[in-house]
Length: 271
Image 1 (cartoon, rainbow, N blue to C red):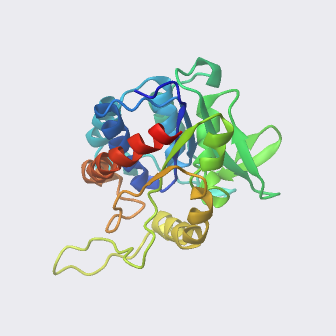
Image 2 (tube, rainbow, N blue to C red):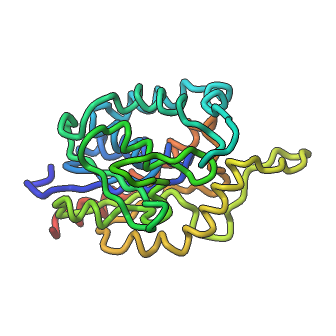
């Protein structure tokens, strides 16, 4: 029960680690924490848009776990570089299933997502028009994915400018902002390696996402400023490409969400 106080959720980027958002949403639902508005960046925009559409945490969890490694790999429609190695048509088809082909005004929960203007470096907050196109822009990892043209601007992944959009949730009218960061914030950012096996050489996607991680660590703390509650699922040992470990990643989100419930209730009581 939120006592008429608007609860905002700010979901950060992190590729596969963003699956942890589903676990956090599951914990919030179990504890009757009603979310009134959502702001998302990159992977957080996918989870946020789907939830804002009305898809519950259980359905999102089932969808994520049902996809195997081959399913995720098949989304990479590689092409000759022209703004990005992956055209993104297959990913867009998947997004259409997850978030629907609807407009922002049709969502059940107010939602906004963050992208970055490649030329100016400006933060671009999208909250009108096609949700699908907005989310596609927010997840456009530079060089990896093709650029998205929106209102005569070329947009890329919002994580470049605002990793966890606390400020956006606050501007949307949230009295209490719950921020979820899935970027590991310490030197323990190691991938799990089976015993007796040599470390696998990172692929293009891994390289780009690790570069994002390293550069974003310095900006994540700034983006979290102003949050009433910060949830940090334990993503150490998970790489940005570990989509096939959905069950384990979602579990970490659920654990961290449950642990944050007392703090969330206190923040609501103070607001």
